[in-house]
Amino acid sequence: MNEVVIAYITDDNYVMPTIVSITSAIMNKNESSIYKIFVIGVSINNENKKIIEEFISKNINDKIYLNILHFNQHYNFDDSHPYVTSAAIFKFDIANILSDYDKVLYIDCDTIILKDLTELFKIDLNDNYAAGVIDYFPMEILKHNKNIGVENYFNSGVMLLNTKLLRENKVKEILLDYKNKNYDLFMEQDTLNYIFNNKVRFISVKYNCIINLWEDYNHEVLYNFYDYDIFKEEIVVMHLAGPKPFSKDMPYINYFYDFYYYYQYTDYFKNNPLWLINRISEQKVKYLENNINERLNILKTEVNKKYYENWIKFFGIYNNKEYIFIYIFFIKFTIKINEKNINKIAWWIPFKKIRNKFRGKFLI
View (cartoon, helix red, strand yellow):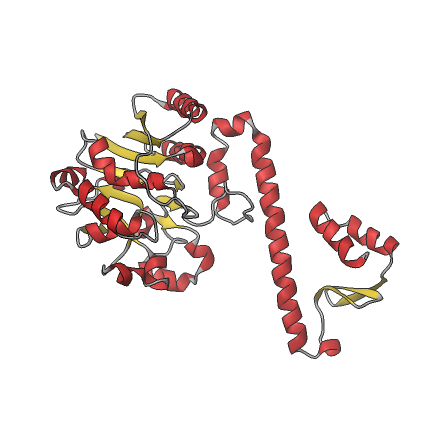
């Protein structure tokens, strides 16, 4: 029997992405697999309790067991991290909360599950406290592992936990004691790395692929670090550990698509499809604005470097006090700056915010 015991932790800020993540896990599980999914809800309000309970009632069957366990927030730690809330401290307590199980797969709620989880759950832990994936950013960019005194540093967003051993060794108390006495740059993650040090089995990045790394850093460097090519191999768990598609004022990023794909299968989308349409539109506009500004800054730098008037221009918009010069594939169009001409050009700009910005620049 391929039984997989899974734990999520959420508070009111992350109920929606938790449901999206569980939806992706259910949609991509093998027919023969049995998932027991526990949601540890921390100080959830009544509205979100109802949403989770309705989700559970619609998805439970003989191969999928779902349950929410409610707790009030009783850990008093700083909650100022941009992507992590203090609810994450409940990771210390999973072994005791799910005391009937000797092994539990913990998954952060900002994840998309793209493959069946049975292979991951069957990894042998031996006498290790956990299995996890080494974290490139704290290790290679920040060298943060040296700050806390560990050789390797894992990401706590996906952990296969040896809950039997954690209970036997009373590790929860050790974790809380360390956390109370030390500052965590990454909420609970430093504490887990320090206390679990030398008792972690490191596993393939496909089980916790922090996808924004592949947007921000050189692919060859990442390939050499992980000895894994995500473009040739299949990701099992995609982790949106950086910018979130559900956060406000966030420009569109390619990997947001995977989140939105599974969002469409939830009641959030069925009850309010316009939210998704508006969110993607807003993010696309934000992306275009950022991209245009970035390209303009690059262009200004290049203009200063080159031959100024003699530089051959391929594509772009330039101006002096009297004229706008538009270049399209080396063809130059010269337009007199006046209200009539500016409004004609602005009419072709599809986004209101950019259109108004264009008018504001030339119609002073």
